Image (cartoon, rainbow, N blue to C red; front, top):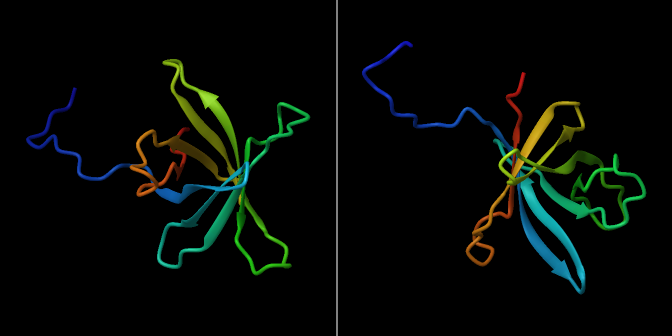
Length: 123
């Protein structure tokens, strides 16, 4: 095992793609947010409540557009459970890059996003 004099890690290896905040309109739950980076894009995500096939995504993410314009799909996410039983999301963006998302159990009444999605570093 290689050792070094400094063991501090100051930055995660994961690169954030976008963050989503929970929103509700009547009984419908959806998410709003923005992409990360220098030119953030506003996004909206919808939960698939009527899955006819288990291969269909659980959450679809779209670019938020003016009313009446088509929303380009940016990502698809599926619910998963880790070996330890913790819920997380996996998926792909519109360029085919792998994504991994994590649920935030403590949003502090909406101050922090409920979902953060990163580019997956799995090989």
